[in-house]
Image (tube, rainbow over all chains, first blue to last red; front, side):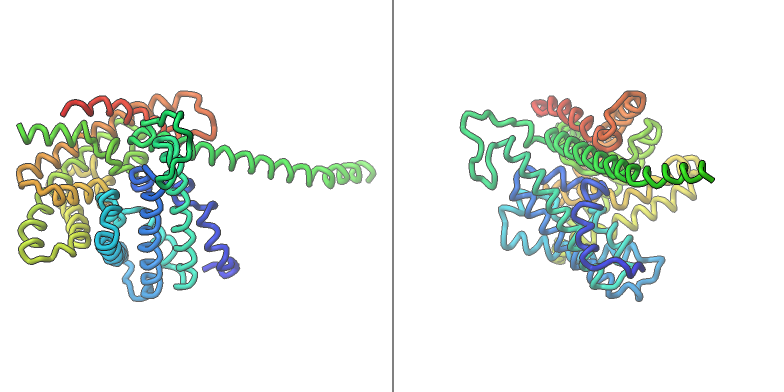
Length: 226
Length: 190
């Protein structure tokens, strides 16, 4: 366990550095399927975060009692329990939203993001650290879903949270709220994210080169003098 | 006729991958080569038909009569996980060549949302047993079709000069988007 990383870092890293959708490419099915509007994205993101946080908390608390051979099965049972809670609460309190999300709330069980975090983090770290990690990853997932939902809703039906944003003269691009639009939006967003990261990396490299160029030239001169 | 419509609907019109977004992970992960795409598609189809039968029995003959519908999610996932394990053991015992062809793909199927999605959809739509089997068969065929087409395109993509930020997953997603657009043309069929 790395002690040198602060709790804040465990949270922050999930937002961008290891963002579930853009960087780890996990949990793609719900990210593509439910993001026809901001509201759906928000609901799905919150449901997933709820399941992720509580299963991480529980699994990291009992991690020493789970035999290594059956850990995946144990994780799945824990996750399935929380998914059932989320599904039933949603059906009771927000029936319309639950209908809009269709089978994707129960399908959180097989969301590779959740199982991935348990396997990679919660089964090795203490509850507090796992909580921060789960919150960070959940928020990262939520942000990705809301951004995608926002873009698709704005261009596809020219509204945002059912409030018209773009002028009436704008012809909505129907394709954006159809399946094809989901793939295209996510593909372009990911490309953009990669482009930004590459650019940042290149700048850092150039700064590094610039920083080390001077000492190396002085060294050369010294060598010549000797 | 009804069964035929269910099959075509699951395989082409409401394709699991390209219009319901189920099974995106293997779709992006395994679609590098046409040969492995075919093996994966076969394994998924096989497990889908078995899942359709088992989950239908579980849901309509056990969970509903005993009023245990709230246990649907955990029981489905456990049944699917044990089914996959069981299928793996049987194939290993019965046919070594088939095991070698499907081997590595079978464990991956457990966490494939297409399988659980199939079980949930057939309980939601209240299909009969025969309809469920046909539904599973159609969904599997549709999955194989999408995976195979995608693998064929990606084999060609490797030789092309894709802009650097778009290499890998992004260009695959955009390709899938164009494929989904093509599949939309089938929407008027039913």
